Every structure is written in structure tokens, then in C-alpha cells.
Image (cartoon, rainbow, N blue to C red; front, side, top):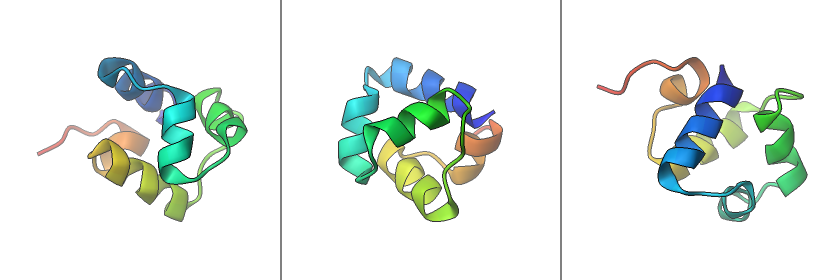
Amino acid sequence: MLSKNLKKILAERGLTIASLAREVDVPRSTINSWVNSDSNPDLNQLDKVARYLNVTIESLAFGRDEK
């Protein structure tokens, strides 16, 4: 679910994996592994990504609607 949601948000906002990696201080290869469902971020990484994208952890990880 995270992979699908992350891809969707990046595409909707015109962001790249490289720009996300820079902003949250995570290697681009790590972001690629999340997008490809090869691995998942730890809670700290997930929090950084959610904050940068201005979404909740729940919506990013589970696809729950923002309220």
C-alpha cells in the first residue's frame, strides 16, 4: 500500500524520487526500494516523508483519507 500511495503522491505533486530523497535525507536507492515494494521505511523515516509531503502517516502507509 505504501508503494502505491507514495508513487501516486509523488506523481500528483510532480516530485521525483531524487528530490524526496534530498529533502528527507535518505539515499535515493532507499526511496526506490520503498517505491518498488522491496522494503519499507522505519517509523522515523515514514514520519519524515509524511511531514515533507504534508500528509498523515496513516494516509501514506494505509491510504486512509485525510480529514
